[in-house]
Length: 126
Image (cartoon, rainbow, N blue to C red; front, side, top):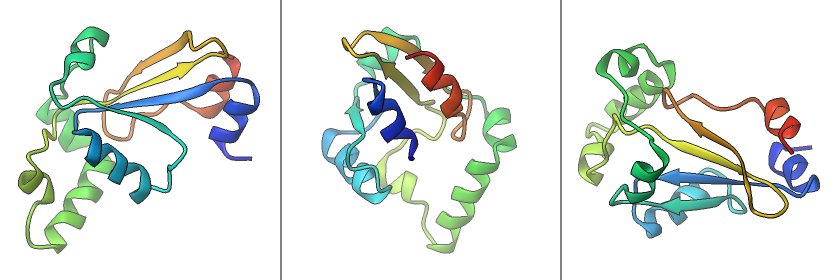
């Protein structure tokens, strides 16, 4: 059973907050096979500020394997897509676990691009 299905089976849901416009959030969902994931596009970072989500450091970015992998992928394209899109590579993500009554059961402020909460921990919070 996939993580989303297990979470929803317990009446919960995930909300992913991204610092991008709504149309890019929709494209992200489709591009990552996450069509049923709730994604909030927050290009002005208002929700980020309210949630206390910060930016990463150059050191954390350089030590993050996912960032290196994505960087090599972009280099192979001969143009950094993040720069063309105007993305902030230092902006960290936020994931919210919502309970059956849409109450926030967990707010996870990422420390790197690959920082995610283990599924077992998510399920334990529902």
